[in-house]
Image 1 (tube, rainbow, N blue to C red):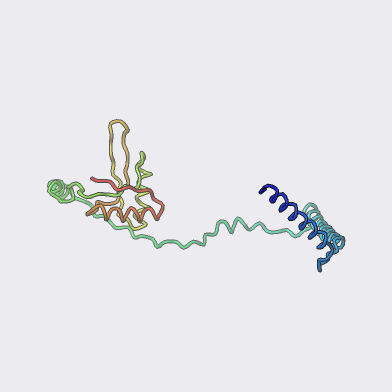
Image 2: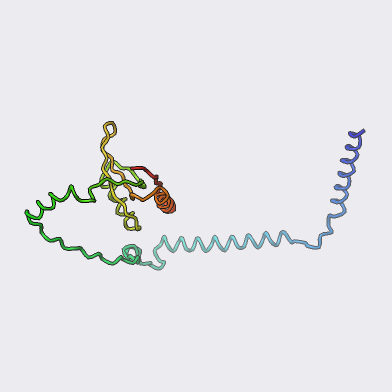
Length: 191
C-alpha cells in the first residue's frame, strides 16, 4: 500500500510542476530584447578591438609618446627611515700588568660560575656566523641572547642560541611564548 501512495504522490507533484510551467510561460512582466543586447555587446567589442589595434600600431611604429624609463631612479631611491647611528665606544689599551691582575682574579669572579636556571634555546647551528646573526636579531628585538659553543663526540661542534638563564621554568616559558609570537620555534632547556 505505501508504494502505491508514493507513486501517486510523485505523479501528482510532477503534473503540478508541468502545469505550473505551462501557465507561467509568457506571463513574466520583464521582457528582454536579446537581439538589441547582442548588437550592443558586439559594438562594444568592436570599439575595444579598434582602440587596442590603434595602440598596438602606435607602439610598433614608434609614433606614440616616448615614455621615460625612470624606474631605475625610483628603485634606487630608498624611502625607509634609517636608524640612528650607534656611537662606538673607545676601548683604552690594556697594559700587561693589568692583564695579569685580571687573569689572577678571574677564577674568583662570580661570573665564572655556571648558569643554574633554565634557559630558552632558540636555535642550534653548525656555523658560528649564522648563530651570531640570530643573536644580533634577537638582541635588536630586546632579548638578552647569547651563543653557546657545544662540542659532541658524534655530531661535532654546534652553536646554540640561548636566552637566559631564568630564575624558574615559568619565567622561561613566558619568554618562549613571546618568541613564538615572533615566529621563533624555541624550547625551554634545563642547565
